[in-house]
Image 1 (tube, rainbow, N blue to C red):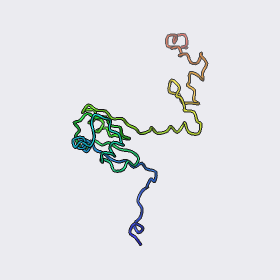
Image 2: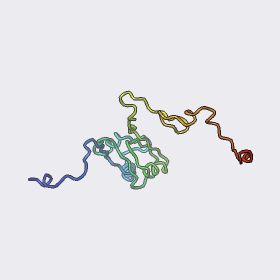
Image 3: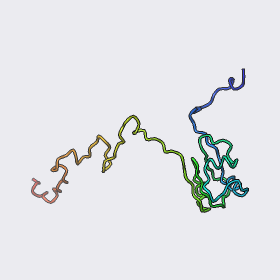
Image 4: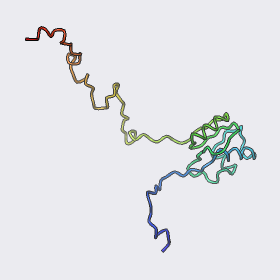
Length: 152
């Protein structure tokens, strides 16, 4: 029996996970220095494949911050780390994130999104001022000034 069948499986393997091609900014700078990519044009995922930096796009490109970047570039990728964004912006360039935001669960199956009420009350709950009449909602008077009339 093969070893992969003899050893136990550990953890959870998500079969729907996204697999991204990884590009570090140091490798991006090396490609610009070699003349594979023009820094004056926006650098898209397709340009990275044409230049030979990425072999296969998979689900997109992740830009990571390892290395140094000195060229002013505009990068369009599916995901970028905070360090990579900071390095590109420090060099005078910009990073555009192309990934789609996650769908809101409340919008599925025709559900309407819940709107928060002012004052922190949740939907279906009412504040104490809405439940009580105006006389009860008014603050109570302090009875300490009339304490001598109440004493026996």
